[in-house]
Amino acid sequence: MEIRQAATVAELLAAGHLYDEPPREDWAARFLAAPGHLMLIAYAEDGFPAGFVSGIEMLHPDKGAEMCLYELSVDEDHRRRGVGRALTEALLAEAGARGCRGAWVGVDTDNDPALATYASAGAMDEGVFSMRGWTFTEAEAP
Image 1 (cartoon, helix red, strand yellow):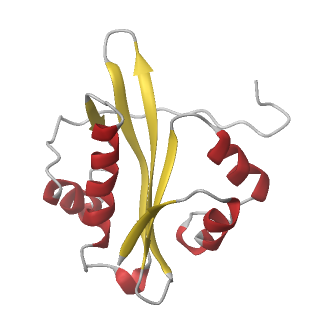
Image 2: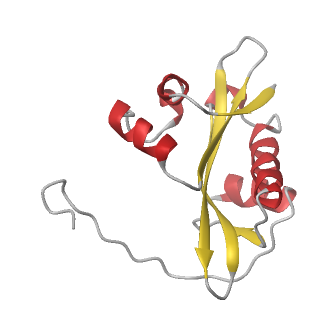
């Protein structure tokens, strides 16, 4: 397995089977152009995109830089082989190289595979929180 930072729209689109929804070329280009956005893709020996992790470097006046692990996904046929842990550790290493003071991830409390993956990579449980969200249609977006 090889883990590489995605640098092209083609790489992001080729990993589309790993996403929740089909990727859009314009969104992929915007992702790559956005400062602080990062996607690492794990490639199997045959070159197949076996998993990805995405992160967003966030800045705040009293916290400095932190890395938010935005999403982790591993192809079903490649699960339970350490791909998720390797991707998580690669993202953490990149966060450290960028000077981030820490990293965090929000995860559903009933997502046992994700909880186990993050724990195996050294994450500490910081307690339960409630997440609220807003959804906009493209016409409503502020």
